Length: 137
Image (cartoon, rainbow, N blue to C red; front, side):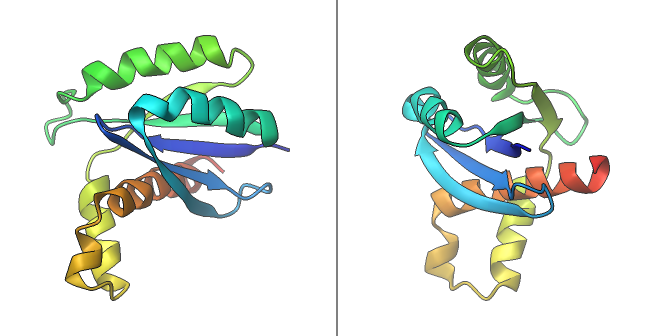
């Protein structure tokens, strides 16, 4: 049984979340500099069984693709070539940053901690993964 890995892809940083082996709980894993992401993922997949990779596809409120989608879609294609045995799926990530900030406030994080963009990216990846789990499993 493999894990499901979720990616909140950003221009500078990328948040990563992963399920437990039973695919019950979504956990924030880390934030990786985007230019190191493919190497990091290769190392992770070599150590941990991953059965699916989710990538947040950024959309505007209207549903149209946002500016960052022009980076996300080619990245998804590279992952499909890098990991041909692992399905790579784009999922709607609308409002994940807003939800991440709300979760940080609700969790009692102080204002300085909420400014940590790496933490926001990791929480966003966790929200992407949790939403997927709720819809598909």
